[in-house]
Image (cartoon, rainbow, N blue to C red; front, side):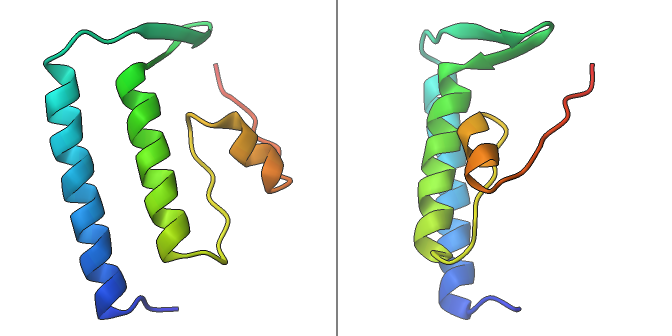
Length: 85
């Protein structure tokens, strides 16, 4: 199903805002966490994941959202994710 012009514009704004936030956050100290063997996540990753998830959920309320940094999102949708490694 195609998206509306308003949704397209909102997506562009969301992505632009996330890019600007990433640039700002990358200049500050941030924490790095180990999710698994040779698998890391930062505070920046988590913040942007949450912002994108919130924005996508607002724009597409009837769609499920699965993200890399939120393993709960996989379970909420009844998906089994097999990690390679």
